[in-house]
Amino acid sequence: MNIRIEETKEFSKDFEKLKKKYISLEEDLAIVEKIISKFPTGKNKEGTRIIRIDPIMGFSEQVFKVRVRCRSLKSSDRIRLIYFYNIEKNEIFFIDIYFKGNKAIEDKKRIKNFLKFEID
Image 1 (cartoon, rainbow, N blue to C red):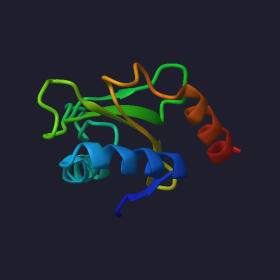
Image 2 (image 1 turned 180 degrees about the vertical axis):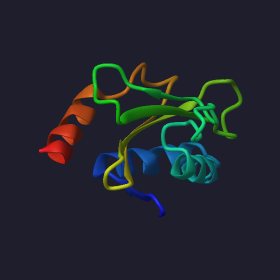
Image 3 (image 1 turned 90 degrees about the horizontal axis):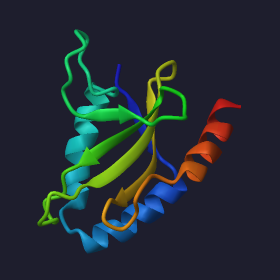
């Protein structure tokens, strides 16, 4: 069964801004999207880590952060992608995306608002 991937409006807006600045971001995100659609928690069935995906502390174990390698960036800085994985419905929601050099951490208020809507 395929995992359905959706974007929040806030994510789409942020992504549009970032992809204008970082030309390769759309292709780079598509690669990550393929990986997380196969391994939404970053691990295979045996528990071996395939990609570094970390749960975000303070939220349900269904909210994850993944570092996206963006070829448009010259340094080792990465784009961060925050998403919610609904195991029961087999779907992923992209919540937040940002460049680590411009924003220190994820938007916790945005995540809380999403979870309030999604879980209620």
